[in-house]
Image 1: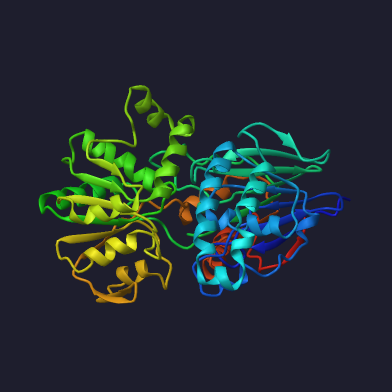
Image 2 (image 1 turned 135 degrees about the vertical axis):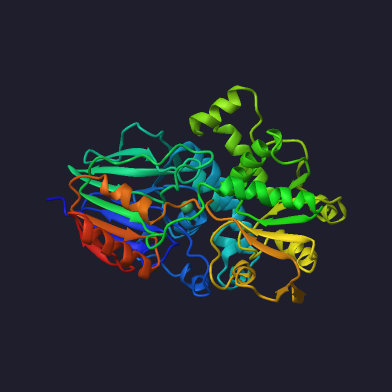
Amino acid sequence: MSNLKIKFCGGAGSVTGANFLIYDDNIKVLVDCGLEQGSKMAETTNWEPFPYNPKEIDFLLVTHAHTDHIGRIPKLIHDGFSGKIISTPATKDLSRIMLEDTARILSNSESGKKFGLDEIYSEEVIQKIFSIWDTEDLHKEFSLNSDVKIYMKDSGHILGSSMFIIDWSGKKIVFTGDLGNSPSPLLPDTEYIDSADYVIMESVYGDRNHEERNERRENLKKIMNENHKKSGILVVPIFSLERTQEFLYEMNELIEGGEVPHMSVYVDSPLAIKVTDIFYKYKNLFKESVRNDIKKGDDIFNFKGLRETEKTSDSKAILNSKNPKIIMAGSGMSAGGRIMHHEKNYLGDPNATILITGFQTPGTPGRLLLDGAKEINIFDETVKINAQIKMIKGYSGHRDSNGLFDFVSNIKDVKKVFLAMGEPRVAMFFAQRINDNLPTKAVVPEKDQEFIL
Ligand SMILES: [Zn+2]
């Protein structure tokens, strides 16, 4: 008996902060090491000691480059981890950009000073991370030791994202990471898994289905055309990784295809600009139709009127540029970043539209806008809201309830499904759906709960 166990150290009872430990007497492996995000409490819990000794961990497997899956790797290193990190090459490249950005934000934040985060997120630590980070390609088996073999499949969530299928002394364990909302504008569909003994899967949207996925492009077209017609300002709070590139791709098609007239489109985010460069580097990972566009000579993220504003002075100059215009900037929930300056400038303007592009966590400024706030506080100033607030649905990067169910019902011989990375109420709802309809058992682990496999 190998005495195989799994411990849910993070991403249990919450969407963010993914961190799972799987181990036996010989080897200890972590899957993901993310930041808990979005709540006041997270500002403290992120900096508590890990519920294991980082010095004893042999490997860290990384599913994808979102901060809620990688953001605590610097703390792991700082606390003594010196094993190997493994991911796809695209995830490694994207993680470097994302971690440098996280380091900059955290070091300058209030909790940064309180918890000494400039030391944890130092340049030295970031460098160490990438010196011990190995890459493996999808669909190619590799081993951690004589008992543990790993195979990665495409999860279709963001560029480089992978599922880990682990053969641990004959037991098959699948870590899904986040699962894509296929079909995505850019990426191939989420791959299916044939069989497994245990599945550790995400459940963010376990209780609801995405509306308007098929109409998302039409909705974007309509909103862009309306903005052009009224010579307006379309302000788009947007996530730098994946969502920005999806929008650029769709806008490129709409504008070059003559469905929307030219207008100035600003990508006002140094992070998004860097991420887009990585997307160009890994264009072989896009789905076939997108690769065909590229083969035909289309520059898929570039079109007439597009401007990337890296420098602060260029960002400030957008205010005085001609209408109609579209401004895309982070953060996606208006909780920091350059978007706050644009919202301060334009929220009072009835000729402006704020376009929300994804889920907004309760308590964030984006959520207040969406819930119909009449005024909002930005940089200690009260701003009256006269702009229109619109939301475009269907660009979610996560599978919905039916999509998750379809995924899990295709896996044969499953002994147990562990539902992680979801709000407890949502994960419970989805567990019930599995338990009522499939010949397997689903459970919702609590934080730090341990199971024998
Ligand atoms: Zn993700």
